[in-house]
Amino acid sequence: MAPIPTPSAQPDDTPGAYVGLTSETAERRARERGWDTVRALPPGTVITMEFQRGRINFEVDGGVVKRCWIG
Image (tube, rainbow, N blue to C red; front, side, top):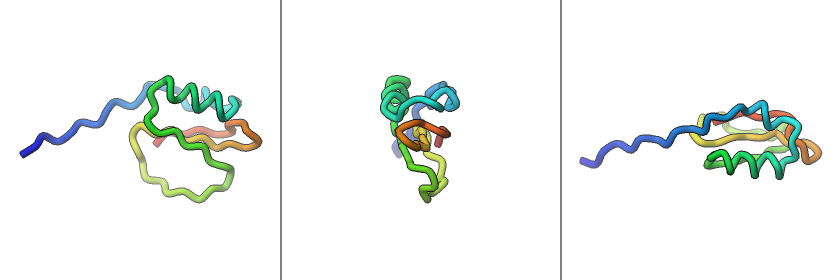
């Protein structure tokens, strides 16, 4: 039987540090810090709320990050 894979560690990052950045700067910084998936969403977007390790989400309005959360 094959071993159960161990998920990679999630980046040690502070989501609040992205608020106020442009979406381009925030995405570049998130990728540099090791996030596997970077998702930019307009306000009010309907999304599923399942937790996905290694994903960071940005709510972007007018090209600026207004809110950020992981998973």
